[in-house]
Length: 452
Image 1: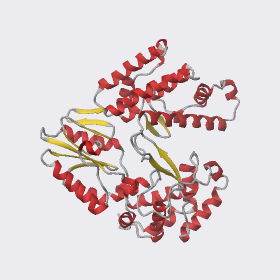
Image 2: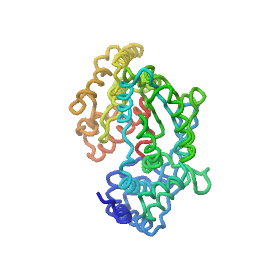
Image 3: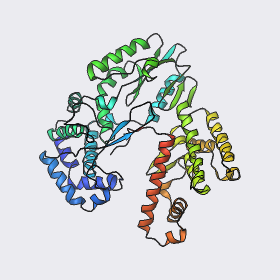
């Protein structure tokens, strides 16, 4: 297949027609706002003029990104917060188009789902020898450590259009928040729509070096190697040296000194990777991810001590247990851990839920509460046809009214007199908030997926 002309692709990607399409399909329902305070709904009131101006500035090389709004995500008290960059709506639109443009030339650098990587690591582990070990490595502050000159050189190996390269350079050098002074020369802002593909481009040559010679797997900066226990220490040194010399990336030290981020372990004993515990005997949910669900269940039921009704709590509890389909994607704890082969973990979760229902005075409501075991089986073996896991995308008007009434306490009769557009707006606002809360409390994985 002939290589597309970078300039022609750039002009078609950043045409008014294409940007308007991207806005309608990807940005128009966004809830974030950048430092200018303009929401997606406000932007839509004058979208055609805004897009016309953006296209002219991009085409003439005069486009400038507004300083990104800073959002800090704290995982726990022992770790510094992760800095997320939130662009203006206009910049988010340009960045989404830029992501599409880069994907045209780096289609092989699309980030694969974590389940694909987990499946391949598990397959290798099941066939490993007794003398084989896992080598798990992790880069220290990966996104903030990406060197712009090295990244732009890699991007320019396939993208030769000066306007495109200039736009990439501007996007990654724009400061975040008010504490950063001047344009940056190191670090790709996390959370942007271009962040993931640029991170994959940065490690593309690294993958090529080690993929052909080792049983090597990577998801973002989390690396796993399977090899003989007598070899993995030398492999660790070789990879560490390559990353340092060629990409100026540092890896966490081996063992407890590195906080467990880089470890060597016998395959039969297993290793923690992407939320799972992987060993030669199969896949299970790692302890940290497992305990997170226990806390989510208790936190959900504890709402009964506040103003929440039992009906509201049971609805949220069932959402935590089953997960859901939402905006054409599957989300939730069981959905993420559907590859686990340790059924005992799901049975223990059901026992725990029943015990907690008794503690919180809801033993008589057990028949209304869904099951982790059944959710697992439906998702794993009947995913395309199941009605056990709610699909919010297919809810009827009556279903939407029931959800709104349950969560907000409004009467169904009053809601039924509202305009359909108002009901839809209310419904999606509620569902997005509930799903986001459920994901954060139960899985909280993949912060680098998606992007503004």
